Amino acid sequence: MKLWGGRFQKETDEKVNDFNSSIRFDSRMYRQDITGSIAHASMLGRQGIIPQEDSDLIVKTLQEILTDIEAGSIEFDIDAEDIHMNVEKILSERIGDAGKRLHTGRSRNDQVALDLRMYVMDELKTILGMVKDAQQTILCIAKDNLDTIMPGYTHLQKAQPITLAHHVMAYFEMFKRDAMRLSDCLKRTSVMPLGSGALAATTYPLDRDFVAQQLGFDMVSLNSLDGVSDRDFAIEAASALSILMMHLSRFCEELILWNSNEFSFVEMDDAYSTGSSIMPQKKNPDVAELIRGKTGRVYGGLMTLLTMMKGIPLAYNKDMQEDKEAIFDCIDTVKLCLPVFTGMLATLKFNKDVMYRGSGKGFTNATDAADYLVKKGLPFRSAHEVLGKLVFYCIQHDKALDALTLEEFHQFSDIFEADVYDAIRLETCVNMRNITGGPAKEAVERAIAAGEAFLKTIEKG
Ligand code: ARG
Image (tube, rainbow, N blue to C red; front, side, top):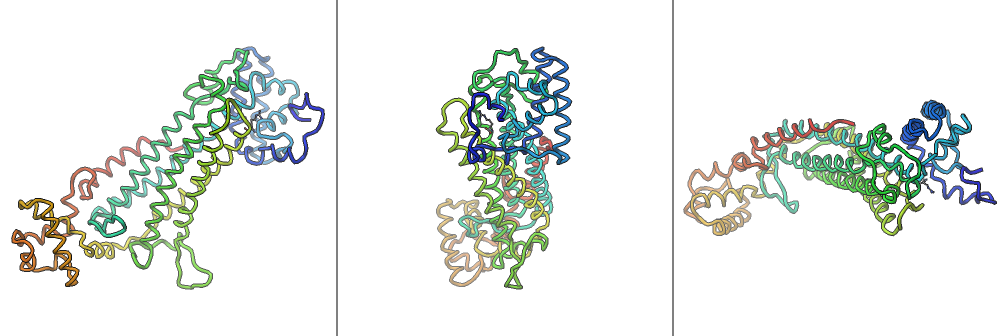
């Protein structure tokens, strides 16, 4: 018979049993469920709501059940619907009436809210550690490439020279915001809902603060209806994870481009590439493509959660059982992607010569040539026009700006002097951009120092 079978005259239809049951996917929360129940049972004993010896027996037996689950010696029962009722059923089978006292003053509605919050907190901490690993790898690449000049792009057209260090540090900043978002989401997840009951709290004198403190929550929820039906934390987590995946996907897209024969800026390590079953010469960036591809399913999880929540009245509704597969898939996918991404990044070989040569083409120093004229007194708009004409001349004569003779420069403006050549060297273009946020070596060194200071604030989960 079902744990709730008292008022029923008929067995549940088998199809409904399968349909309704969530044990297939919520069994992964067994540790959170048991830890939460241990805290609840201890509190019930302390408060004299159940006999102390029952409380002690429940705690001891729950610990044994946890060990047995971890040893793989327990098979869950689909008839018991979910992890909460499975654990309670096993407990009651082992210790009878004492076990039947565990659910006093509690509902599965506040129980599942508790378990999911605990699960999400554990996983977000692990993910934060993985983001930190990725950031540390980026810092290593940046430190090694403060002088590695490469073209910077807008519209995927060569724009201005930068350094590889500066380019990868852009991703450091993105991951920094991701880490901040995850940490922030953790704060709002750390709200303890037990005591909300099914929806209207409880008449028992529960010590909610004790439970919160036992389980490491920052605070208790302040409205029982919201306590059982708030899934904002899961939506926020899925949203932060979606943005994180978007960043991974952008980086992967660049690596795929850079790894192409046309760019040849990087070569991916053999250990992080795959071959073709038909074309013997191929070495494909499958890892980067798969991360880019998996980004969509994390967005899908976020959309599932938002859509699931938008039309349900207070308080708990069964729709909310759908939260778990969505947020689990977001978490699993990110945990799958991040370590392989970091490994791929750490083993990249950068073709610095190709990057440098690429920076010399495409008139990436044209802005600096215009700025040169501005510094000698010409208004910027006029300097822009002079350079536009110069570039057109260069294209027609298949020359780079720095290959022009001073006479050629003078055909466009007599302000040019011999020092123009130094002013438009790629190294000058980069290192003159020394303001905060710029690509000059010193500016990037300052950004790296700030990055290192930030990473010290992140505890690894
Ligand atoms: N398995 C359910 C879920 O995931 C637990 C809560 C069920 N509560 C209920 N009254 N049916 O949401």
